[in-house]
Image 1 (spheres, helix red, strand yellow):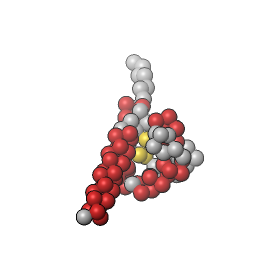
Image 2 (spheres, one colour):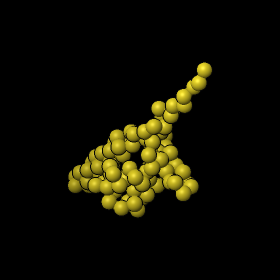
Image 3 (cartoon, rainbow, N blue to C red):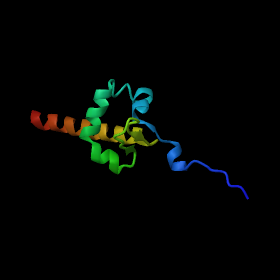
Length: 91
């Protein structure tokens, strides 16, 4: 009986973070440096979300399909916090 090898469904949606930034997030992270800075600032949360898989090798980091939602949530939270801080400063 022969078995065919199927790719793990969890791995199928992974792609290189650099490619994701270019194709899906260049409007938010216009440069690779902007993405790298964001990643450093929120590294733990991105890792814990399971949407960023760091790799120090030549191939670079991988991201999972839910990375957009995680980044959006972080940015929304930061924007809300910054707005609240500005409003408190005006009082």
